[in-house]
Length: 103
Picture 1 (cartoon, rainbow, N blue to C red):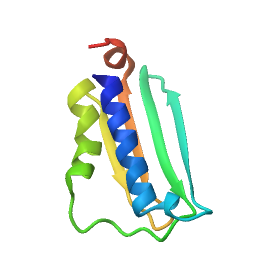
Picture 2 (cartoon, helix red, strand yellow):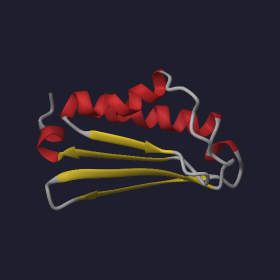
Picture 3 (cartoon, rainbow, N blue to C red):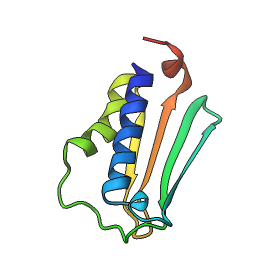
């Protein structure tokens, strides 16, 4: 379930980046960083660079809800999406034990 949730989140972020964000323009790109923090949790960060100026969405659609709630409901993780003008940033933290359960 965790792998499916992560895949759906990555797909939604990539789709949005192609439609509206950094992957819409030739010079745009995305960085994806991850680490295991001191509390045995995975910390993952998606950050867009070089795309059109970002403005926060006027409403939250299905994709935003999928990104923000998908992993939280699956493995007790937390997702936060921010919209600075230079590019969307989405961070996720989830306990390793929950991710590794394999259910």
